Image (tube, rainbow, N blue to C red; front, side, top):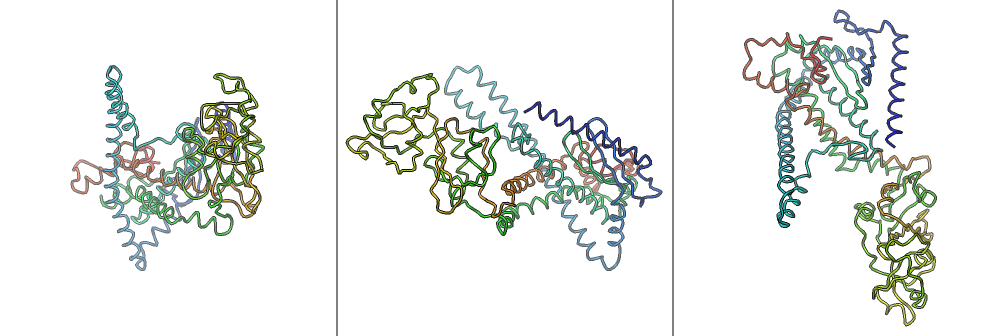
Length: 502
């Protein structure tokens, strides 16, 4: 899998280099305009190693039109509202900076505590102390800040939703800088997108002399606007999640909620043994005796928890059970077609063909004791080491008899290779995977948008937070020797750490 991903990554960047080279040949004169002709629409695409950059002045005219419209007398109310809106962004930015610093210090403290406790617990001969310290280590390792790494901390299949969420969040961030700049009559120099390896980013650039000429409060509005837009988007996403808008839109026409019946199969891994037995669109109603109907996450909970013995068994003839071979129940037994069963009332074990007993269409008598099976019957159930799991499935929800698939193996493999959901397409033209992708994208949008808000407010080089902090200090005290116009403070530089004029 790693080799395949690496090859795909190299092929992708090879294609990017070839396309950019061809574009450069066809547009040899496509150079960004100077400030003498700011309204010219030019686009420059460059690539160096694993860094792709697309910079354009196409949106400059629209930005200038917005700035000119805000200056008109009939739009003064809107300008006052936008000033108040971005003033609120300054206050939220200050709060966000303190929260971001608090998270950093808390994470550092937790890491130091974990390292210290691990050092202390290592040489300790006292079991009680070691037990207590191990518990403290486990508790302190649950950091608030958790990295999102596809293939490591989250499934590799989440890569594209994560990248899309990151790009969308950055575009919203830079739109904040652009709109706030228009409110302050800042001419936009350029904007664009870049891709470093597989991480996308966006940027907006203003002339350094123009942003340096702003008063500190106006400059603070522009600098804090990006993070403020992320905060507003995060609140909007929380509202969308609370109202379940995505769910209601999907179920309005295209999908139906079948959670009262079970979980619908969205996909089955190509290498899974269940590939020929579970088809997308089928409804799984139960795992063993655990119903999948209702809310919550019964699918994940059952397949990821340790083995739980089946509470009820099956009646089988006593003679057939006690006369059956017992070789498959022995430690390190060879693979057998039969499975190990044990009696509920005692420790007797025997090898039984599980398929007719557990998947029979006839209603096999279930039991909790031998007394329920009559004089010539014994109540048995699968041994925990047999690793048997019954999957009850319906092809359609139309009153047909359920089909039982018997799985033999680790439960976690089912969880890793079979994807389920609560929404099923009403028509075949609607893809079964769409609801899961929508909900996953919505979840990552919330996480990444909040992360961008906090990250950009850290007072560190190359981030908005450093210039935001300096501007806040300047609101109360302006250094006499400081010349803002002498320093390139375009918003592009705040994002990329590049302080040269474009």
